[in-house]
Structure formats: structure tokens, C-alpha cells
Amino acid sequence: MGCVGWETAVSATILLKQFQKDNLMNHTPKIGTRTVWAGEETYLMQGATQVPVVHSVSFGYDDMDEWMQVALGKKEGHIYGRNTNPTVHAFEEKVRNLEGAAAATSAATGMGIISSALFALLAPGKRVVSVKDTYGGTNVIFTEFLPRYHVN
Image (cartoon, rainbow, N blue to C red; front, side):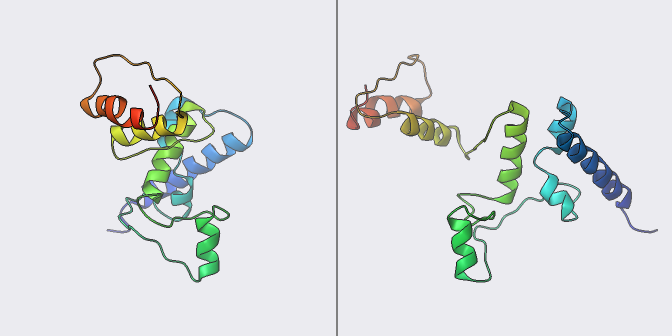
């Protein structure tokens, strides 16, 4: 019967090379191409035809020096699944590319993103203006947590 899926692997490799060539030549791939291929370059080069779902929580390194380089952001890699993960990184890269942004981040829940954004942007003495009809958890942040930090 032969090798099942080899056509897919060859097609993926050809399309990825075209996507990379377009990016290197400063051609902006169309939205459909970016939707499919952005964020998948690393994994296809490693032989996967789609981004694998990585379930690992921790990632190992050969020695402490390499781990430290990754932990300090001086070398690409992942330390702990709740902070970074190859599957999530591919998703974030896809969103970043589609939005034309410098970077993208994601979280497992809406409240994770909402609270991260609020605590990153607010400081004592600042004021938040919001609609009254918000998600209950968001309302609790506005009425109970932010006042503790002197945010109105």
C-alpha cells in the first residue's frame, strides 16, 4: 500500500517553502495563506504536517546553562507549560501574523486576559471606565480588587 500521507507531507513542505519565500521577498501572503501557515514553520521543518498538540508541562535541557539561557529569553525554548508551550506559541504566532502585530499572547480563559491587561495597564490613581453590564468576574475585579490598589 505504500506510505500513507506522503503526499500531504510533500505538499505541506512545498507550500511552506512558498510561504517562507513570499515572506523573504517582502510579499505579503494573502489572508488564506497566512491563516493556514503562519506559526507552523518550525514544526513543518521538523517533519510534522500539522502543528502537534504538546501536552508536556515541563521541558528538559542538557545542562543548567542551556536552561538559564531559555529562562532568561536569550535562547528560544520552553520552560514550563503554563508559561509557554509549542502549541500555544504556534497559535499566538498565527494571531500575531493575522493582526499584523509585533507580538501576541493568549490565556486559557477570558478572565486571565482581562486581569492581565488591567494589571499591566493600571496603576494607583488611575481610573477605569466600563459599561455596567460586564461578566461577573470582571465586575468583581472592578468593584473589589482594583480599589485595593487605589484604582477607581
